[in-house]
Amino acid sequence: MPTRAKALIGKMHAVLVNARIRRVARSWPKATPLPRPSAQRIRVSGFFNEPLGIGRAAHLTASALTVAGYSVVREDVRPLHRHLLTRQPEAFEDASPADVWIIQANPPETRFVLLARDPAHWRDTYRIAYWVWESSLAPRDWVQWAAYFHEIWVPSPFAQQAFAAAFTQAGQAEAAAKLRVMPHPVPLPDTQARVRSSDKAEVHVLTLFDPRSDFARKNPEGVIRAWTKAFSEPGAGRLRVKTYAGAEQHPAFRRVVDLVKGRPDIALICETLNDAETQALIAQADIVISLHRGEGFGLPLAEAMAQGIPVIATGWSGNMAFMTPETACLVPFELVPATPRYNGPQAQWAEPDLTAAAEALRRLVQSAEARETLWQAGRAAIGDLWAYWQPTVLFSSQKSAYK
Image 1 (cartoon, rainbow, N blue to C red):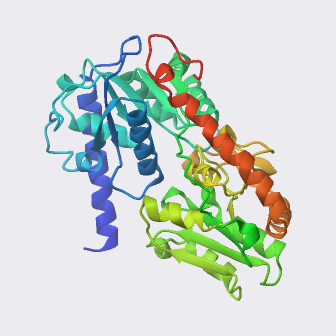
Image 2: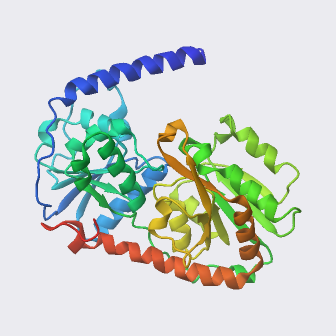
Image 3: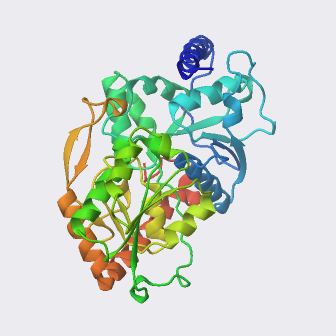
């Protein structure tokens, strides 16, 4: 079937599904004020079987809840997205009731999860949405879905502010009371076996991006430009630019290829890795860099810091939940209108200073001492995030001090 015909069919399908959701959602039970339950059993719905950042985050959520002593049921949401025009709502495969239901997916996907499940089976369940956003203003049409949840978790104060701004803009400022900051619980692996960068002949720098998360936002071009600005000739170290298999088909990928021509010190890695493989790749790096324009949290950056790897990053947005000038090398920026996909021009995001990024790269690549100082403080900062995931904080009748 021609690509154009497929796109047209896809648009028609989306229109019909959205119409069905609007019709059916009128009968869905909205969340009424409830004290937090003394949870014993928690259902987490997320993209558990896909190489997505939000899927990785769902794994971390479920694991942290298990460590905290709760009985956790994991539900993969992708199968629930199928046959949405014809299927009837169904009960959970595991029919045992859960005290809490966490859906770790943004509203466009959350709607499908609610549509696929029989409301009779979640009417009396304490419901939590786990959302994320990457510019200064979340989408206004997401606001309506807050009504079906008792709480809305977000991974950073930055994301909290973006959603609060959207609620206010939509005339529902009171919904902001549901927002609760819950940073992703990043594990702290043993770093004793890691070969310290001071013992290596060549310094390896890594940047990671997923084109599905938007080329402009992730800004791999900015990293490459900063690298070539820092090192006009190969020889200082190596830069690895990691993305997913199939990224080569993205229209913007040609610009990345052009930027690395004639630079044997820059390697493009287009390969889809699972979580363990991604962690192993990060562990091989001496420095991780992200010149993003906006992050809801910045999970790969936090995971690098947890492994004892110094990080260079744009000093704005969700990564500031765990970064300070003492824990990471923060790149200055200018706020500019975001792209339409991220609610621009109403919303803003950051344009990192590439000259400053180049200076940071030179300093860390050339100084093992600077890298050593930074990684120790960074790892401690990630450890602090676990305070949010203690049993006494997670579920109680009182509001959390971490809200």
